[in-house]
Length: 143
Picture 1 (tube, rainbow, N blue to C red):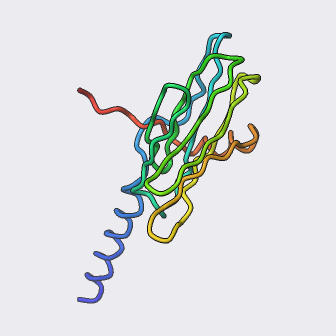
Picture 2 (cartoon, rainbow, N blue to C red):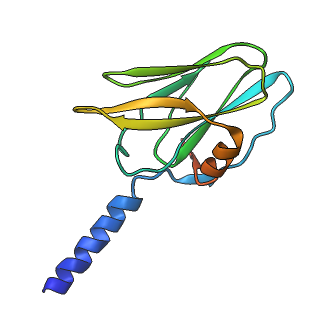
């Protein structure tokens, strides 16, 4: 009886642990025309706050990135672009100067009193490339 209960608890925990991550294609760099800049916003998998998907906006584009996911924002090169994330209680923003061709921003969810607080952190390319390899682009459901 105890063994069956333990097995059920393990299966439930595993489903809960793995069931919240983004499902989709693994990270793949995009090819961008010279007139554009690429901003990769990614969110490494962490179980805490896995149900939160606050809107991330860069330029005119918006995405809700789940844990273990990333989104590619393509903006005009050479122009300043504001990337922001907003929750019910807080917001954070990062300004991209557009001088480089590729930028990496890590989205993190910190804990508040009652809700998660999203933050955007520009990350060095070498560190970001190692972290983003573990992320998947979220597949859009077929219409």
